[in-house]
Length: 249
Length: 223
Image 1 (tube, chains in turn brown, red):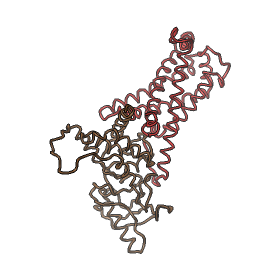
Image 2 (cartoon, chains in turn purple, green; image 1 turned 45 degrees about the vertical axis):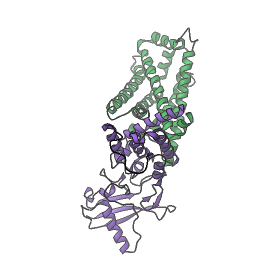
Image 3 (cartoon, helix red, strand yellow; image 1 turned 135 degrees about the vertical axis):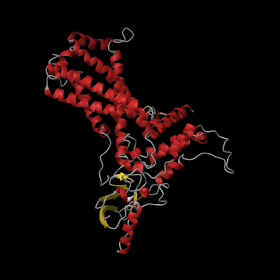
Image 4 (cartoon, one colour; image 1 turned 60 degrees about the vertical axis):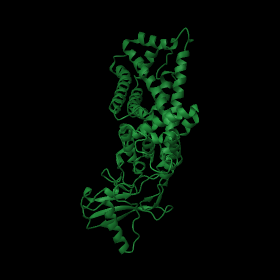
């Protein structure tokens, strides 16, 4: 396959960026999108140019490191991570636009790499449980009803890639935050921090400069792990409950 | 607790949802009242007068009406203020646009902000036209709402402004009602179809019900 790539190039956080056009040839339909970019970078290095910087790690769709807005879609046209997107989703001769995640809370570091540490700080605000350290507890000591376990697992699937923020017209992190809140709030292990978790994580999310939710549903459409839009509804419910309770104290 | 609510984006959305639902309830009553115009001047004017004497003798003359007006003003101000502040936050949170544009969410969703502004301006005109009579075409007659309504909808611009605003209202309710349910934590996978249906039915009934009045005047059924 022969492709025309229009890639966002930006030297550093302070520099102005622009789209640069590159031609790549000999792309196999079985290559992943990142392998296609590796091919481009090899050519750039051989010709003495600066390779395109992009985030990647496991390349198995589970680490959440890869990003990229491809032709206007976070993680591209398929509902998966960019590393699991294959070139068979494109056609010979296509022009592909590749841009970084866009959000005030995710500043561009270089080219296609953005700083997602705002997510880490949201997690630090409440994405943990209080547990005694030492030997693993007996598995049957804390029963979890099956529907609750399923609900927790559905939200635990979030890999924190930030596609929800990139897809949201308001640059909101509601889907990420709600996935983390719901995952722990439904479980008995998360019960001691049930109220403080949702209040603190939402407050941190606001402080980081993410936008608010207007329920456009773009986040859930972009999510490679299929976190449902109702995740946000559940978090809103938790937030209202926690606010009522903290008011009584 | 009030501080926590107002300082949080989720809290401000709650304010929007609650104030929106209050206005929606009012609109249902308002729409049903408006339709009495089809029963003739006598019944319509009598109904309008009754609005001033509701709750008597416990309530003094016009007390109930003013109570409703105060609640509505508070709701409008709360709704608009939180909408403005949340929109500013949203725009700040996404300073650079994507080069590759993609079609966005549904039309109703995308037009919430402009639709809201149109509705705000409409309310100002509507009050100046039919409550105070300041911009009313022809002589405004206090206590004769039937004739006033007919006067307004005998002008081309009265019909255009009103119908455009009511279409905006329908779109606003279509996304707003469903969103309010999500914000208040009432939505779920199993209830989603029902909530969307209620939102669409409300939007359709209110728009059709309100537009029925200018259509009645235009077709000569109401004159």
